[in-house]
Every structure is written in structure tokens, then in C-alpha cells.
Image (cartoon, rainbow, N blue to C red; front, top):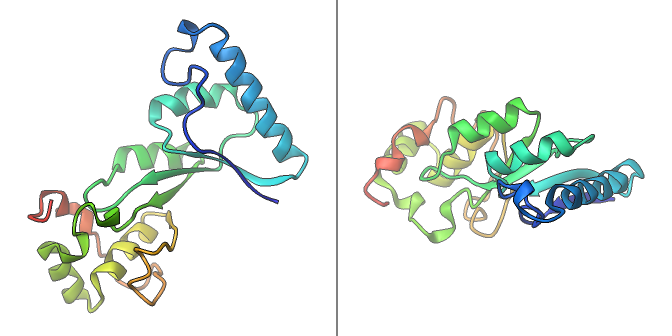
Length: 173
């Protein structure tokens, strides 16, 4: 059994106004109940969501008997999402970083501030960024763009390395 994941916000009104759509909240309740049934029957080990915003979660959570365990989000030094990550974590929802190295949209690994910080810690820029995410209790999925680093990050790879304190102002944006 694997995880059951909603690939995108439920189409039945969780976008912020369930009462405005005919049957929106009722249909969303049915979708949630179906996922919970799959989980309770042990056909899935977890229920997860992807790209749910705080607003989506605020509409979803009251409908749930079983809270989503994971929210997969785009998180990297140029899209830190500190407040939202904290919100998810305080709700007991683990956060998974999608595109932790910005998927080539921005050259995070060539950012001068990140390179400087990585050099000062004796690690590669990718190790620094991935370690920073792990230190924030964010799950990192090793993808092709993460594969540039042959070592997996641990919370000990780059102690006290927090590249997101400044990189959102960095020149490579």
C-alpha cells in the first residue's frame, strides 16, 4: 500500500468558496470520506495533498477525520514559505519539498551567496540547500535535479546553514 495523494486541490469548492458551488462542500466531504476509507482499510499508508494553500487546508481540515499527513510544496531558497511551512507543521502535516533546487527556473546552485555560504561550511551548494531543508524538518525528495549531489543530505552535513535567510534577495533571481 502506498500513499493516496490528491494531485491538486479538490475541484469541489475547496478553492475558497464551497457554498458558492452547487454541492461543493457535500462533494468535497464525499471525496474526503472516500480517501479516509481507503486509508482505514489499509489500502494506503498515508493521505497526502499537493500544492494545497493555507486556504485550501482551512477548508479541508474541518471535513477530515484523518488529516492529510503530507503537503508537497515547491520550496527552495527563492520560495521559502516559512509561515506556511510552520502552519502545516503545527497542524501535524509534514511538508515535502518539490523542486528544492528550483528546477532550473533560477540558478540556485550558482547563486553567489549560496556558493559563499556553502564554501564556508565545506559543502557543495546542493548539499547546503538540501541540508537547510532537512534542518527545517522538510522532507526532501531526491529527484534528477537533486542528483547532482552524490551524497544524501543529513541534518549534520552543514550545521547552522540557512541559505534562505538572504538568497531571496540574491543576484541570481
